[in-house]
Length: 126
Image (cartoon, rainbow, N blue to C red; front, side):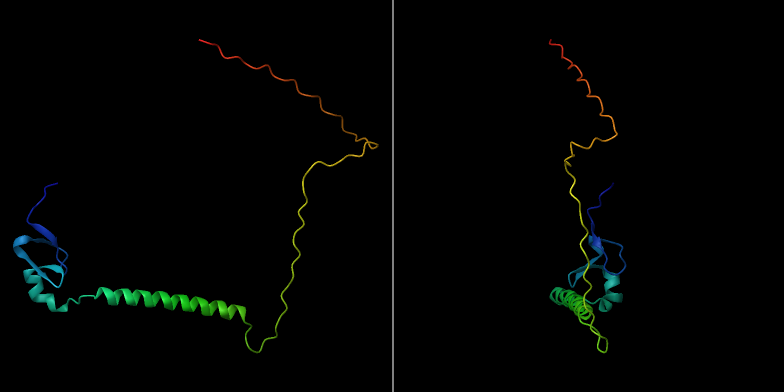
């Protein structure tokens, strides 16, 4: 990529590259000299403090709407009968563990044969 040392920035109006010779720096932005003379008075500069305050206000508005919605869901609507909360039974979870068998009762299943232990393989030493 060929780098041009005369290139400064992009024009705030036409979004084209601005060369150092054709540059006009006004209100904290870079313009072509011709673009600024034609359209410079239409560019409004945003105050950063005001933009921050506006964003913060929008966030607070959303938070307040969320709080209001939660409060409306918790309170019954006027004119409706107050309902009792429905109590639900907790599901019973059975513990899995060893079950003691009664030695007097014999099950019809035959016992499985014990497994034979496999011989361990020895690694060859070098």
